[in-house]
Each structure stands twice: as C-alpha cells, then as structure tokens.
Length: 608
Image 1 (cartoon, one colour):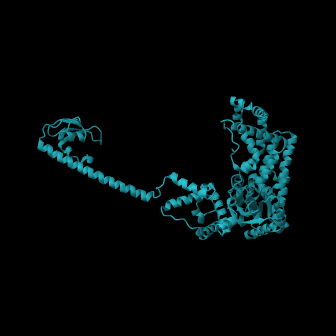
Image 2 (cartoon, rainbow, N blue to C red):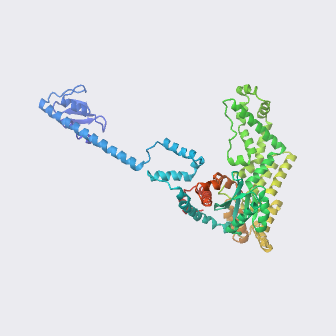
Image 3 (spheres, rainbow, N blue to C red):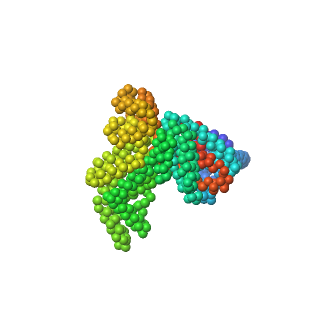
C-alpha cells in the first residue's frame, strides 16, 4: 500500500484481501481482539481509537495508555498531511503561473475583447475589412502573438522608407525569376484602366504575364487633354523596350474606344507585336448580344419578371426562398448576367411551382398587379422552362470558357475550340433555321471583330486538337496566315514555318513516335512541344510562345489592389512620398499570394 505508508493504524491490523485492486477498501483483522472487518483506513483508525458510528466497534483489548499513544500518532499524521497539502498547492500554483508566463503571455484579455479592438481599428481607419482574408494579415497577427508582450510596431517613417525598400528588394529578387523565362515563352503586356473620379483622370496599370507568373510594372495617371494619348503611347513604348521587343508577343488592353487608336499607332512602331482584345470581355459582349436576339430576349424578360414578382412577394411575407444575389461565381455575374438570371430561375423551378399554388400566394396575388398572373402562368407552364433550358445549353460553352480564366493557366490554345463547340451546340439543338442563322452569324462576326489571330494559330498548334480539320477551316487558316505575316517579316522564314507545320501534320519524325501521339491530350501543350518538337525548332519556338500567352485581363482587374488605394495626392499628404514603390509592392504581393499562397517570409525563396 505505497500510498498509505504514513497511516500508522495499518501496522496494528492484518490485511488479508481487498475488494477493489488499488482502492483503500480492505479485508482486515485486528491484532489485539482478532475481530474481522471490511473497510478503509477510516474504519481501522476508528476501531483502534474507540470511535463509533462508522460501522465498527471499539477494540475492547486496547487499554487507555495504548489508546493515548495511538491518538498522538494520529495527530502527527494529520499535521504531516496538512503540511504536505499546503506545499503541494504552493508548487502547483507556481507551476501554473510559470506556464502562463511562458506559454500564454497575452492571455490578459478575452478573445472577444481582442476581436473588438481589431474591429475598431478597421472601422476607425476606414480600412477594407476584406484584409482579414489576406495571408499577410494573418502572418502579421501570428508574428505579433509569437513575439509576446512589449512589441512596438515600426514608425510611419520606417514603414514608408527602410521597410518599404527592403520589401521592394525582396520582390524584385523574386520576380527576376519570371523575367528569365520571357525569351523562351514570350510574354503579354496587359493594360487596364481605372477612372479616378476625384481627380477627373484615369489611371492605366501595366502588367506582364507569362506562364511563370504575373507581375505589376507601373501605373500612370492620365488627365484628359491633347497630351494624354502621347503619354500612354510613350509609357507603353518604354515598357516594351524595358521588357525587350522580341520578348513581347502581344498586348491586351481594356481601354474602351481609346484602345482602337492606340492599336494603329503601336502597330506601326512595333509591327511584330500582336494587339489583342480581352477574351472575357469579348465573350461578355457576345453573350449579351445573343441575349438580345428576339427569341432569347423573351426568355430573359420573362425570367426577370418572375424574379421581380418573387422578390415583391417575399417583401410582404416571411417566405425567403429566392435571392437575386445567388450565383456560383462572381465572374459569371459580371460577364454573363442574363445567363445567371435565367440559371437562377431554372434552378428554383420546383420551389416556384410549389409556391404559386400555395394558399399564401393565392391570398397575396389578390392585391397584386397583373404582372403576377403573367409570371404565374409562365411558372406553371412548360414553354418558359424548355426555352430557358435551351438558352443555357446554347450559352454553356462560353460560360465554361469564362471559368478557365485564372492566374495560373494559359488557355490560348483552347479559346478557338470553344468557338467550334458553341457552333456545334447551336447546330445540334434543333432550333429553327432563322434562329440558327442569326446565332451563327453573331458568333462568327464577333469572332472576326474581337478575337486575335493568335487564337486561331494556337488552336492549330495545340496537340490536343490535332486532326480537327484545321487546314480546311477558312477562319483558322486566315488566323494562321495573319500570325505568320506579323511574327516573321521575312518570306523565307515564313516558308520554313509552313514546311515544318506540314511535318507536324504528317506525323513525320518525332511527331509520329508512340509517346508523342499518346501524350497529345495528356500533357500540357507547351511541355509537349518542348519534348517532341525539337526536329522543327522554328515551329517549336513559335508554338511555345503562342501557347504560353494569356488572353484575358479579368484576373488583373479582380485582384488589382490599386482600385482600393487612395489617390496619389491623398497618400502623399499622409507622409508616404514613395508612392510608386508602395503601388509596386502592393500589387506584386497580391499576385504572389494568389499564385503560391506563401507567406511573406518566403518571398526571397519563391520558385516560379
């Protein structure tokens, strides 16, 4: 009984069994009166000291002097126990305090209180609350917590000077790895404008994209006037020279009508560089034009009428089955609003049909307008639902194309294939000849106006689409011809590229190897050309560059923090003089976090 060594009474009884192993309940016999009992130490003590009321009798064989001796032993035991308990409590308190000081130094406030202080900081300084989703914000909070009490943040002067320089140097070192890939893959300059209503001017941001990543170069503020166009053209020209004219394959702009004038001037200065339109905005225009076709427009208007009626009903009742903001992706909402509207209504078909036959609906519509009856008839009928489903099927190839635009994927070789699929979808749905002709003309005319010949060339050179009859497709061949004429000014070089293209089509040399054929639809197109195009080096170089380009500015717009940055004069008045460095650091940190999800501490070791 190791836990009961200091209990003197056990020495005066004989223990010969226990009911529960490890417990204090034993079977014992008194050494003086030979009485047998079951029980713990308290019963042994009571028997020897003459206590009653605990289920045992006082031992009749113990005289008064011996009992007094037992009483002294019991008092000494209680004193030892009291002292031991006091020391144990003191040691435990010391350990607890030590653990609190070493492991949880900031637990002087409840988490709710800390959360309120952080929230107050955002509210008081007018900061974007979406910052809490930034990996850099979480890195900052964790670093402060790891440091512990006494941390003092850097001063404003340090943030705008020494730390800004340090951060910019880290970023420049990291994105130098991107620059090194441009001679091999080529790159795309992306120009995105942003209107600054406060200053009455607009800002143009310059980005460079390639398979290894997107980087922000600079931004310029342009005031309306005679020199505005020259300022942009000069800045764009300087950007091209900085990157290297041979490294720039195309320029993508989203500048509205101004872009058309710039294209003509820049094409004369840099005739080998392609000037392309943003594919996502082109698709947006095409889909909205499709939605304006008479038979399509009727579907959209009917869906909008149903939406308005349902929203009105919800305002006057406790029902909340529909939300006009519900969308699988914000990108669809911006570039395909009509599609999203019809899609939302179609998904609610069963719920809406159950709603319009309910008693609550019948009571409500008695006081509603005539539009309710029209929408109710559409919901209960079949024609609207079948036409809505057909509209979504016809637009689905374009919506899938929109979903592929992101910072990590170049889809240059896929864009023209989506045009092919959209035409096939139109022709396979059994719509009448007039509607079919309208759709085909609309798709083809928009393609000719809005899409770059690089898309047609990429469709031809993408091994995934080998053997799709590209040589018989007039649009593809016109795009290929335009690509050659701009890419190679010398007729001999163009002839060599055409000969090597024939080698590719005929599966001669390395193109006909089993691995090359098997991997056409399994490998990344650029990687495929790097592995199997070595016998046609000129065509290999062109294919790699064309297939490596981006085709949309949407990811630059969606993730460009310049839009939330105060105007330059306001920032300067706060004491930050190096606004260009601040914009450079802010934009590139945003792109790095999107691409890699890495911590700011890893910037110097990023591998693109």
